[in-house]
Length: 128
Image (cartoon, rainbow, N blue to C red; front, side, top):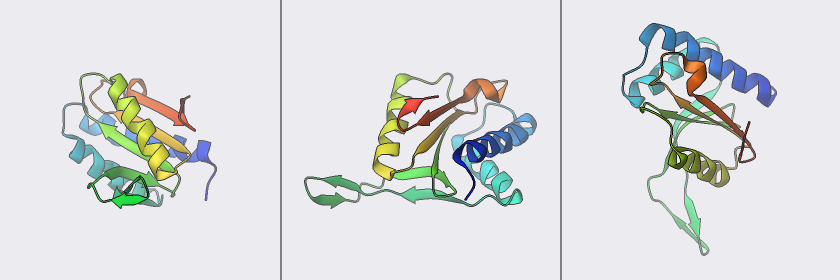
């Protein structure tokens, strides 16, 4: 496993690489597939649409919750293609981090002209 900082930088670099070619305005599912292809080409381990059970009062609920990508089993990547990121998107990522146990999360909005402006990184639930 690579250090978390290096891993997130490689994910961001992969995202920028294909975003330069595809640009903004596509569906999240397209960006998810493209990022998966780019990570695979760079030999970075990832899983797509990872199911996460919800634990509530001693029960495990299968509510169909799925994480967009989990990279190197430690970095949760939540993809968006929206006009702008809202507080609810951050809240969603923070909840997914807590439920998944991943120490780091990236919230990436591909609907921006320059992708660096669409990336937010969270460590232990705090924006960085």
